[in-house]
Length: 396
Ligand SMILES: Cc1ncc(COP(=O)(O)O)c(C=O)c1O
Image (cartoon, rainbow, N blue to C red):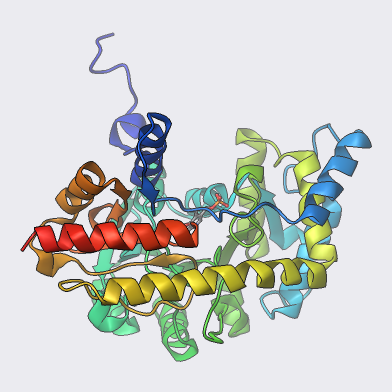
């Protein structure tokens, strides 16, 4: 065995997460004593609501430290099935159609692995979340991209998807509200895509991990709820990380037709077994006391919204930068192309020269843009904007 062939084709093909890399670099600079303004993080900066933590601590105290069924705690699956029936995603509250996994990321991966293989194409609207193409490759499938810039609100149309379809298209990925753009699809835009999926016979994975982080009275739409046929071909993925500031808990969800849900649970049973048992009791408390859970989210949203508007206003005031008013998640995705640098060089130099960490649009399949997360303090936003403005002026 040589050093060249020691790794599998899967390991050789996969790229490490660029968003985690930026965050790690910013944290390393901070640890070395540098005053870094970090806009790289993809996680809320609040603590998990205390009633959720208490339910988990109680579960630990009660000895809930053993394996759980692979698909998730029966009471959590049942509560989620009820919730998804209320949303109109499930016709009946059938827990067998719900899987609880170790994170939304793993739910996405299992959705792709359960439905796509060699020869299949996965259509990914760009700008995209960095993990989708890698997951498609790990499943042996081929990722294909459709680009939508700021001129179309970063949203692909059904027409664009139709033009890109081939006989091998198996799955199209939707992510609304989106990482990295924060943009949301309108109901009519989603309906047109679902109608196309039914007419052209492909599956949809709807990644709704940011579904509760909405501003300006924007509404989230669940494509699986549009019709009985839609519910059959849409795999709905979500999780607790972003909504309840539970990124480290590793808890994701997946809702699909019984065939796909069963396959996902089987894949999970052979790979990770179950999501951590006592963590699931924390999630159960959130779903069972939804009013309290949503109140906690509202409290976080007040801060997110204030920061969003501060960052948006600051970015729009910088000459050479334009930015859409995104209505979801906690990201803004300004265009920096006019400043004359490729986005990778822009973000590298910004970190080097001004100690401001942003993620290059290149990582999301969108050259000419950068992603800023406003899951950070008002102070960092203000200081970061001053530095960004100085950096932009230095490029003249
Ligand atoms: C679009 C999107 N989907 C899924 C996830 C996965 O979240 P987690 O695995 O923490 O639940 C993320 C996290 O960054 C994301 O941005």
